[in-house]
Image (cartoon, rainbow, N blue to C red; front, side, top):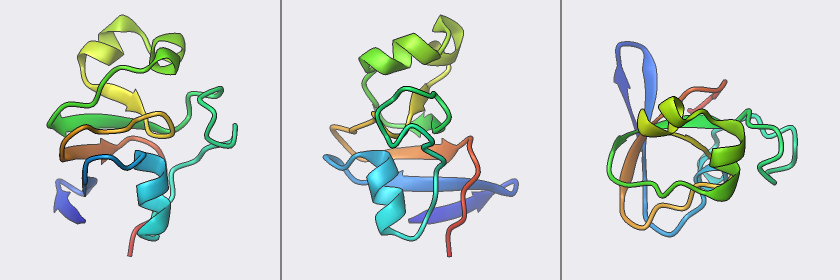
Amino acid sequence: MKTESNKKEIIICPPGRQISAYLREKGGFVPTPCGGHGNCGKCRVKVLEGDLPVMRMDKVHLSETEIKAGIRLACQAMPKGQVCIEVLSTISLE
């Protein structure tokens, strides 16, 4: 599920799973103060490999530059294929 790269948490997520839910299921944590509704913009992840579609709430909370850099909201992100992401918010994985 994860590898270390320069002390950053790198997570490989399977297709068809909401990223924040997948992380919770595996013992990880991404802050979602809004309850995962995409209202706060706090659960940011960066796509390192693969494709993660841009969702409506990504456009609300992220700049065009962030979106082009692969930043997405974990609570809204649903990969269509396997993706490798870096969690930009606080996370704890065992």
